[in-house]
Each structure stands twice: as structure tokens, then as C-alpha cells.
Length: 240
Length: 240
Image 1 (tube, each protein chain N blue to C red):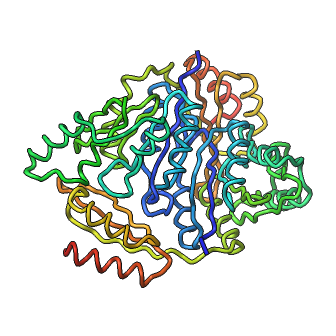
Image 2: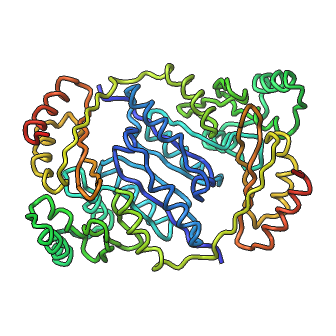
Image 3: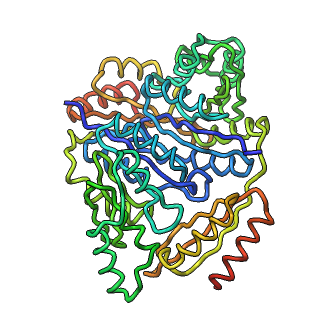
């Protein structure tokens, strides 16, 4: 059975302007690989309602699960929740369960809840809340879309909540073999190896170090014995 | 006049599996911001022909300029050039100008050019070569799509070649003001400031340091006087 498919949508002008270097994509991709879920596509869009709505519609139709990061805070540029509601054609308002979480949190802190903070309790109709153990304001799941914060510590905590609820496929086994020769020297035998093993993904990632060319060959598959067999062939063809 | 728009397409299983952390997106986004070109969207897709062709078609139709990274080496998983040709409906084969570059390079190195290395001379009909001062194998421009290598040193060298040929808009002026209060405290006045300045982009990027909440407010625009005026208002409202 093929692994479940997933996509990620990163929302935020700060990534596209180069001001912030996104960390959530790299984190999520590693977590999904470990869980046996195939991350097939990532899109990064700006804080623009049409761009967000279009991307949510396209990704949630094409892939089994979609994860979003960013745009669920209290400020005017946090428009993700409203855009998700629009993409699914449901209404959105401050919801009592989310408001109760925030009120309890701010009461403990001795802070007033205000109109801005209440924005974080805007949850689309029919969504289930995602717990935020870091800073309380919840994420939510609507349909096959999990909506999470952009702040990496919060994003990671939300991923930890969501992942066990998803049915992963077989986790991917991945082995890397380093060959200290340029890709042009090894591409022929490597292509033949890939053809012999259609069930494996065999990738070549060139590097250049101290003026010398080399390649890391990564063999991935769900069957460890098959990955190891291909690795052995590679090691015989290109001894260290 | 609005700034020119751009999109980026990152091609490679290694990014989506979490094995490699992409560096080119962050690099390109900073370079484009400095050049006054608006990066509006980034997509990351796997080494899958349909995914690459569909993304190239969608992005090249929607944005003025598209940059791709990855998949132009000599190995079997380097399929970008063929996919670009398919997206534009043109034919592709080993081209004499690209072959001559590679032959001269390998002759200097005393290495044989072989079938795998010749893959790097496959250039779609009508494309213009992009110089590769690092490892010779060229990128190319076809229509509004610039096709570049994924290895960061090569990617950066190719961006340096391409950027001066593009007509940028007014470079974006960006000022950051740090407020040591949580977003919920400042979101109201910040939203009002954003409404007063529709020509500016005012973003709020929360952080948490040593258990305290704060926000970096980033004001961006092409008119420095306008950016400075908004910054002054903000500093009066939230003195340090």
C-alpha cells in the first residue's frame, strides 16, 4: 500500500522577503518521513487572502493531509483562520471553547484579554482545536487541513499533537553512501542500479569539498532488505 | 508602478524528505528584495515529471519571472531540463554550445566526457545558457523561466549572472522596531497604523526570549520618508 500523501503551506511575507529563514518546513519534512507519510509538495505564499485560499483549495484537494504554518496570531496580518474558513465555505467567529482557553490563560497571567487577543479565538465552524502547550492560543483542524502557528516552538508542539492521530505508512528506511568521485563518473552505473530497483528511490546529491567533487548517494525504500541489497551492490561497484 | 513579480520552484526529493535543508530559497528571497522584485510564491516539488511540468506551467503563467533550483546534474534523477522543455512544448537534445563548454572543461581536467556528463548539455530549443563559473555545466533561460543548479555555490553564481539582466522596481526599504510586549498588547494600535498607511506593509513577528514575549515590527515600503513617518508614530506609541 502506498504511503499517505501530505503537503505543507507556509504563510508569511517574512519568509518571501528573506527577513526570516523558515525552519518549519525542514522540521515537518523530517517528522513526516519518520512517520511514513510522503510530503509531496510545499508552497510558500504571502499574507494575501486570495493566494492563501487558492493554495488551501488546491492542496487539500490533491493530497490526503495538509499542514499550514503561520498567520494565526492576534495582529492585523494574521488572516489564516479566516482564509481557511473561506476555502472550505464555512463561517468563522470567536468560539466559546477557544475563548475559554485564552481567558483562563490571561487570567492566570493577570493580563486583560482584549479585542486583538480575541482574534486568536476565531475558529471556523466544525473545526477541532489543536492544543498549544507553549502559548495556549490553539491551532485547529478543519477537514484534512491542520492549521498551526509559525513560531517554531509552537509549530513543533502542535505537530507532536497531530502526528500520532494520523495513520502513517511504512516508515522509510534511508541509507547514505558517500562516493568521492564526481557525479559524471558514477551516473551511468547509478542509473542502471535505479532501473534494477524500481521500488527504491535512489538519489544523488553532489558536493564539492576542498576542490574535490563527490556525491552522497541516498537509497530510500520501505523494505530494509532491499535497501541493503542495493547498498551492497553500490559498495562493490564503488569501493571506498 | 508596482514591482515586478517572481516565483521560485525548488525541485528535489531531498528537500521534501528532510534530508537536506534548502538554502536557496532564503538566499534568493533576500537578493530579490534588494533588487526590488517581489517574490510572491515558492513551491517545492519532488523529482516527479508531472509535478515539475505542472508547477512550471502554473508559475510561469502567473508571475513575470520564475527561478528554478535543482535537478540539472548528470544523474538519472536530474530531469528538470526535460520537464522545462515539456512545459513549454519545445524539443530538447544535447546542444553544441553547451557540449563545447563541457568538452573544454573536461579536457582541461584530463577527464573523459561520457554519456552521463553529456546529459548536462541537454538544453531545450530556444533557451539561452546561464554561465556557471563554479563547475561549468550551464543553466538556461527559456521564456520567463531561469533554470539553475541546486548546489548553493552554483545557484548563487547563476543568480548573480541573471539578476542584473532583470528590471527591478524600486528597492524595498525595511525598518524593524522591537517592542518588548506581547502581540496581544500591541495588535490594536498596530492594526490602526496599518490602516492609516495602505501603501506600507506592516508585519508583526512575535518572539519569546527568557520567558518574556516581544514583537519585531517590520515596516516595509518603497518610499523611505513614508516608512520613517510610520516608524516614528510607532516609537511614540510604544517608547522603548
